[in-house]
Structures are given as C-alpha cells and as structure tokens.
Length: 41
Image 1: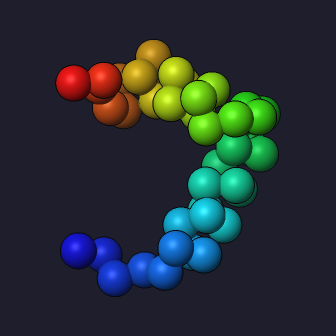
Image 2 (image 1 turned 60 degrees about the vertical axis):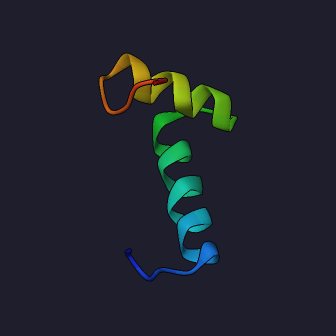
Image 3 (image 1 turned 45 degrees about the vertical axis):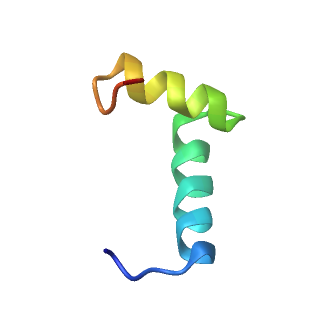
C-alpha cells in the first residue's frame, strides 16, 4: 500500500491530465493502454 490520501491521488491525476491535454478519465485510460502503461485485462 502507498498510504496516500484520495485527495493526493486526485491532485496528481489532474496534473497529469493537464500535462497530457486529456479531458476525461476515459481518455487518460486510453492513453495509458496505448502507451503500454497498463492493460485492460
């Protein structure tokens, strides 16, 4: 476990989304799959 708060995760996610110019979690997920950072399985 990482022991970070939900707010911390939300802040990091928002900053990453801004840097990648994606506007939804779905777009962020598609980016992660396309770049090989995760899979849908």
